Structure formats: C-alpha cells, structure tokens
Length: 216
Ligand SMILES: [Zn+2]
Image 1 (cartoon, rainbow, N blue to C red):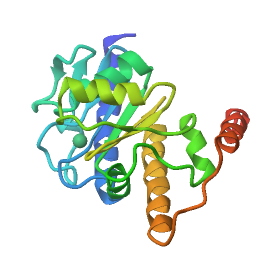
Image 2: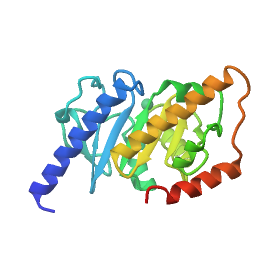
Image 3: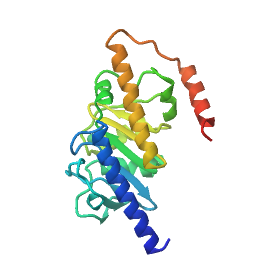
C-alpha cells in the first residue's frame, strides 16, 4: 500500500468513526461523551477521542493509534476504553467496535447475567449473549471480563455499564449494537407485565444455523 492510499484510507476511517459517534448520540445509544467507536485499517485503529462531546465530533478529532495503543495521529487522547477496543481486534478478529451506554441493555444488566431468548434475532450474534461482570471503566479487569463474554460471540452486555458489539466493518458493528439494544428493550417491556415466554436453546441454535446461510 502506498502512503497516498493508506492516507486516504485513514482519512475515510476517521470520517466514518466521527459519523457513527454522532449517530450513536442521535439514536440514543450513548449520551454526551459516553460510549465509543473504532475501526481497524491494517495495523492501525481509528478511535473516538476522550472527553469530546459526540454531538459535534469531527473527523479531525478522531485519534489514530497502532495495535499497541500508541497514538500515530490526532490532537486528543484516545478513549479510556482503548484497551477494550484493542483486545477486540487482537483477540476476537474484529474489523470495527461499537461500545454503547444504551439504556435498555444497561437496565437489563442490573437484573440479569444473560440476555433472555425473547426473539430469534439474538442468533445474529452467534447465540446467547452474556452480561460481563462489573469492573471499573478503562481497567484491564474490564477487558478480561468482556473478552471472556465475547468468546464465540460478536456482542456482550457489560454490567452497570453498557454493551460492546463487533463487526467486520462499522456498519455491521453498529447494527449489532442497535439490535442488541432492541432485544434488551423487548425483554424489559415484556417482563414489566409478566415473566416473558422465551425461545428454547434448540430454537436459537436453529436460528443461528439459518442465519449462517441467510444473505450469502
Ligand atoms: Zn463505557
């Protein structure tokens, strides 16, 4: 890859990260400076900065770091959850990562250790989703807890915190974050009325198998 081409790709990735960070606030998945977004470009990662309000975040505010977390480009410090993002790239093969503080998933995390099988859509993540135990934000303990919950899955809920969703690209990771929030919201609505009926593990497994063939 020539320097010109990699420069263009990095510029595109920074714009995309800024766009999705703004979208995350508009869609109610995060408030102000909370949550964060990143995308991988080869051995580099474009990631939202720490402490910049996402309503206004621009491509020039987005940081570029290497896979060890050293800043290569950008005038701001990267998000405090950078170690979590890097673990998603290094351990889970992600191409993009969306971390939300979305209300339904956070509310569910106070009540459950998993996301109940309320809808077959949960199959898009590879099956049942775990709630990772609480650890302080930005800590290596949080990285380990969330990383364990991401085993063979593309999303996890984080107790007293939010969610993380992985994808081969940002559109896919973002769609996962929205779908996960919707699943949690469905459970909250139903369980406010009565204990909800749930799909069985076999039914979810069947949906996972169908989704593998779907859209190819
Ligand atoms: Zn967070």
